[in-house]
Image 1 (cartoon, rainbow, N blue to C red):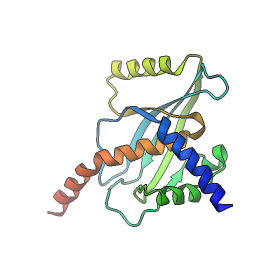
Image 2: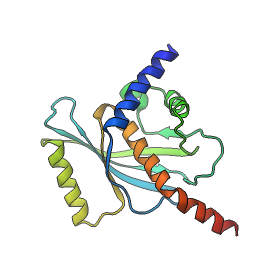
Image 3: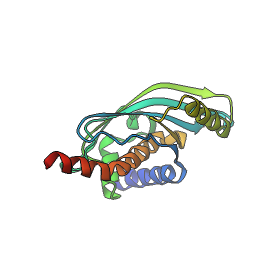
Image 4: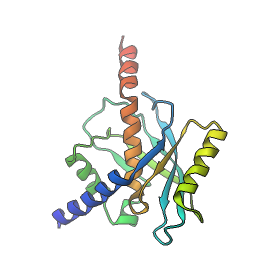
Length: 179
């Protein structure tokens, strides 16, 4: 049974890695010594009508996302792994660890504010949202495209990209604080 779960997670993860596209990343680094709220818009093709687009808007709170932390044991809340794809958070955590993906051992709390379906193709929805973000000069909201059935993994890929982007900045912040 364990091998079946790992194989299922593996195929879901591969799908997310292959199909997730980060179109806009927040400009600001993650805060080194305090929690960071990451706003996002995640677009997916509808499973019911491929000409429609699923639009998820929300935030992920990353509690004190400093890079140097105790052993990797992240806590995921609000990602609905069990409800949406039948996976326990422990299975996801173990899978990511086995794949060499190390998210700092912090709490990642996802709060989805809206879940809408737009009656327009994904490419049109993407253009509309990009235009809106540019018009509002919104530099804090990430824009991600990913598969609807594994949207959670697409969000984790986005968070991991922000952690990677912030790494050098975090090291400098830690160094300055210690000296």
